[in-house]
Length: 135
View 1: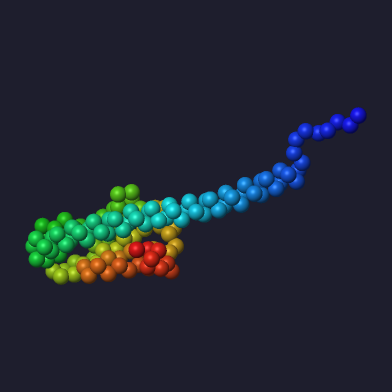
View 2: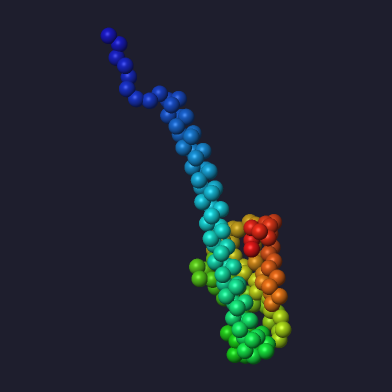
């Protein structure tokens, strides 16, 4: 009488591990891309919020650099989740430039490094990404 062994052969285990590894790498890559987009939204939200504050200041006082404007008096602002720090530069009576600089985990962002927004609504960025990816 021959006894049949119960269990898996080594080749079956190796194939299963390989399939799980391939699926895991695909899932992780997709997750990383979605997480990067979510953190990018944090920076864009802060830029748009500060731009709106500056526009309200301009509407109210006729200039962006009025002493009563909170944004005009600040140097740096952190996003809600601290993934971006916005540097306020070039605020004059009629112009401003806001630059969102990645911080912490987002500092490893490769495509949309620094996001910039000015008084004309011009959206720019540094890095090899495309406008559609960053804005």
